[in-house]
Length: 240
Image 1 (cartoon, one colour):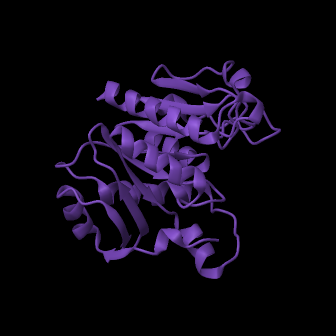
Image 2: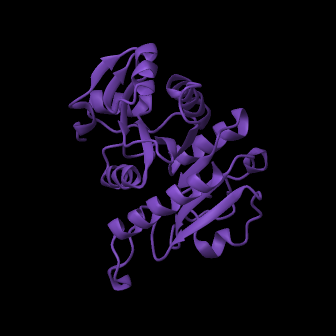
Image 3: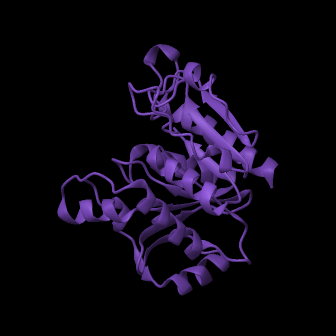
C-alpha cells in the first residue's frame, strides 16, 4: 500500500485542530487519538467529511480525484481514515474492516472533532462502505446532510440482501451518486426501491462501482467524477 496520505502530516490535538479549522487552515494533520485528516478547499458551498471504502484509503485514485474536483466547486472536503486501515498500513498487510457499528462510532468521533458552532454545518458521506457508515450515523445521531458515493445497496450478486433497513430514520437531505452499472445497486435495481423523500439520486451513465465507464461510452472516470462533483456541489448549495 502507498503512504502518500502520511507524508506531510502534522501532529495536532483535537482542540488545536478545531482552532485551525476555525481560522481557515487547510492541509494534512495527524489528529491525536484519531489518525490522519486531509482538509482541502474553501467551504464556499459547505463542508463534507468523507469516509473511504473497505479496501482502499483516501489516497486511492478515485478519492484523490473526487477531493480535488469537489474543492474546485467550492465544497471543502475533510478526508479521514478508519483505524483498521491505519493498522493495515503499519503491518503492510490486508485485513477486513471491523463490524460496521464500530466504524459508525469512529466516524461519530471524527464528526465531533471537526464540528464547531463557528464553522458551516458538517455534512457526512463516503465511498461505498464509508457511505454506509455515514448513513447509519445520520440515522442514529442526525446530520446536516449526506452524500453517498457508490452506496452498497446490497452485496454483489445478492440483490435480496438490502442495506436499507435504517433508511426510514434518515431525515436530512441525502444525495446518492451512483453508476448505472454499479453491481452494488444498478439503476434498474434501485428504481424499484422505496426510498425516503429526503433522498435524491444522481446517476452516472455507464459508471461502475468506481464510476468507471466502458471505453465504448466515450467518457472516462475523470469525466464522471467531475460530473459527480458538480452534482454534489449543486445539491449542497440548494439544501443550505
